[in-house]
Image (cartoon, protein in one colour):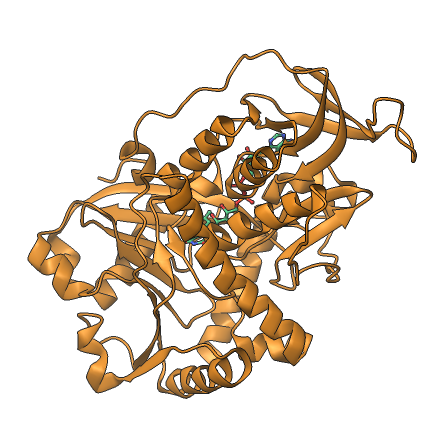
Length: 429
Ligand SMILES: Cc1cc2nc3c(=O)[nH]c(=O)nc-3n(C[C@H](O)[C@H](O)[C@H](O)COP(=O)(O)OP(=O)(O)OC[C@H]3O[C@@H](n4cnc5c(N)ncnc54)[C@H](O)[C@@H]3O)c2cc1C
């Protein structure tokens, strides 16, 4: 019987505590949220010499950033072909290249800050569920080469066994520049690095509202009053890194950013020989469906399997069964291995399935990475920090229109209904 807790929490050292410290009365920059976006921003800001105060409602990394699949992807959620259709060739290329810089940024932070987070530059696999998807992978390979000068490999059905021990797929795209991390270790490590660099971190501190003091700064330079459950702080700048919950602080985002849940199971550790047979090069994997499965081996050789058609707000056992069924369809050899862990997490998404970052009402924000936040949140947190520090910023995700969703934002069933629609599209395509 799977424990209802996150594997990554159980296999990371006990986290540092940043609770119950006195809050400052004023600061240069308040960062709201202590996931990848917030800790990366705080690290960059502190290194750049800013007086930075990070406010986290729970504990560092407690939400999506410590619970995800740990796939550090060097690509966007949209294929480059889809992104070109949506944004035009130049902007799409810039977005894709930003995702590749994001993968490099994760590696650089891990190296520079000496983070012990099981980082591997292992590459990722996109696995074709239908024969027609192999053609799409080949078209993507061509576009990546032609538009972005980026090389990936496409394998035909008869070549798959060198990468995956299964007959389930029709072909694979291998992107060699992606990586993997143990996400709880990575986000907590970035928090510790930010503190070492001088950031002042406060857990258990929920931002309730932000008031603009005036359009012109008061004498000490403060432009905002940040109201929290533990007191108020004056600050010159704000970086919003609260992702799925950003709408609680910025009303304009309330009906535009939806909280979407995703769920994961992890088996007991597999014998080394079997693990190497299933994923010989230890890459991270996802498939070509909209309701995709994403999976990988953990550092201790468990199969970690997420995604599928799982739903928020239903009996956990139903989601566990769905995930296990999906896993056994691809790897029937796992039928006799116990499931040790089951957990879920919440990410922010918008209807256009794009990442969004920039400024709103004088506040900086970055959010909605659509399953690519290990790299993109880390990178864009850093880029927004550069903007605050007055340094050059690379942000091709600026100023994209965010579609209005519905007045039912709080209702997870809006997202559940969207997943059913995606499953219908999967059946057609
Ligand atoms: C199950 C699952 C699997 C995933 N798998 C992958 C993967 O393999 N690869 C990948 O790249 N991405 C993956 N993702 C997505 C990835 O985890 C996110 O994109 C990323 O963690 C977003 O980081 P963040 O810092 O923006 O948000 P979060 O990690 O959600 O952090 C936001 C923080 O803000 C805090 N907060 C909220 N409101 C307030 C407030 N009012 N005051 C103070 N603090 C507040 C929250 O407590 C939270 O800690 C997955 C997500 C989930 C849920």
